[in-house]
Amino acid sequence: MTRFPRRSVLTGSAALLALSACGNGVGADGAAKLDARVDATINFLESTYPGTRDLRAKSVGMLVMPLITEASFGLGGSYGRGALRIDNISVDYYSASQASFGIQAGAQQYAHVLYFMTEAALADFRTSSGWAAGADIKYAVNDRGGTLSAETTTVLAPVIAVVFGQAGLIAGTSIEGTKYTRIIP
Image 1: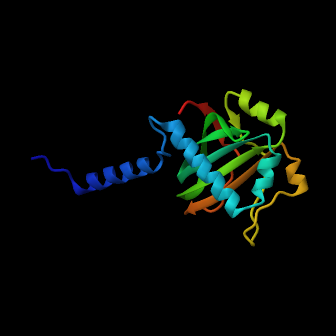
Image 2: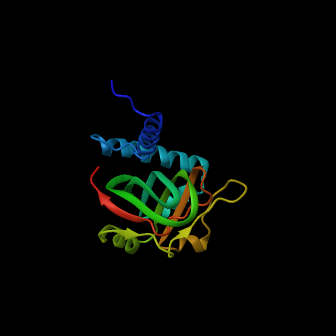
């Protein structure tokens, strides 16, 4: 009978648990699962922050990332999958990934939506081989009262990001430097 040291079993179990948490639910029926998550994310966002309905109505498209998993211990990264919606129809699927280095430790999960406010911004996103979120993105953030709204100056931005639903141990979330790549789920 082969005996495994307790330490090896605990280490292996922790690694499996960490990997399973990053799955984001895409498998053989990936598109259907991803679309269901996108629908649930939009419903949650718009019921929690009614001001986002106006953003959706004014946008020409939106990239919905229902679950981004981020972990860091010096070196870190994040990953998630989502769908690009135009006229409320999923037209493409994307992954989002980000690497980081610094004095940070912890893990968290969150969701975000990119609202494309101009046809040019949407076209740039769709035709790029790997679009990276940069400093030109404007954030619509929730205030202490728990409401989220887009001011007139924000609506004029080509891309507006809404980050919400943070849960975990890393404080603050930014999507700058996140790379979006088209995938086939």
